[in-house]
Length: 296
Ligand code: NAD
Image (cartoon, rainbow, N blue to C red; front, side):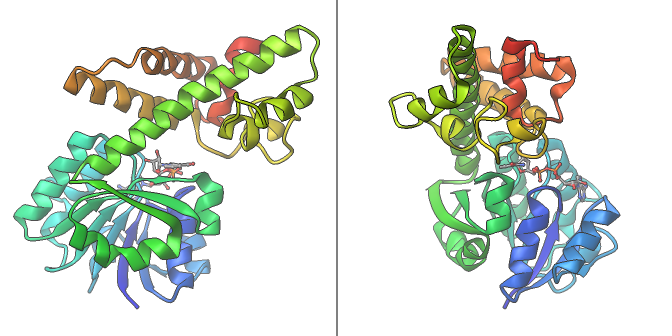
């Protein structure tokens, strides 16, 4: 049993904290949204009154926050948590943020003698709830071994991809591919439908052919094709289009920092930006198909 401080209880962090509590760990939680804290308490966690208050006796500190600025805000600066984290505690940030920010916070942690991992996840809200997430980890191998039992309580696959920041780089590579594939899958189905094809039959064919992907099989962007996909419930739930826009922007920044060429990634970033401007930023990112279908 570990004493865990958990900060950020949104669509992902909430069920992750719940799975840690279910596994028998003592989890002290905080979120700016009181209802999110209450949901975690209902799942077996203990409420803290602030991020600082989560740290009491903490052996492990886990954060699951929206973006780089939130992670910097929570850990760094005059009010940052790093100054108050108990000596010897391990810090694990599971948010998807800029690799440069992950390295900066990890260096500040190291300056205090604390080990820190970047451990962004893949698997969506369903994976967070089911405890089947993939963890993509950057940092020192011995820190990962300390974290492993906890990550196993929240996930199924754990990849150590390199030093600090490498987890974020790998996560951005995955999400850039996903963002492009989702957009082109919607485009392909729209083309078939414009020719009078049934989107369900077309998708079923693609799902066992070479155009196969998570977008055809699990999160199909066409309404009515897959009953459980966000597209079939008005694009609610799932992975927000604005979060995908953030990740595509991080991929562009990461590419620029090393002079890499990502022509499709840059194009797709603009599609998610247009989807935001069309008012669909809070919907699932598969709603990007509506740029093509002009459904609203
Ligand atoms: P979310 O917006 O649902 O949750 C973020 C939570 O952080 C919110 O509840 C918010 O109140 C809280 N928060 C923000 N600032 C805080 C602070 N200073 N102190 C305490 N709490 C604070 O986002 P999410 O969907 O849970 O995603 C979290 C991260 O995981 C993001 O980086 C996202 O890109 C990544 N991610 C999301 C998914 C997904 O399917 N939703 C999948 C993989 C990765």
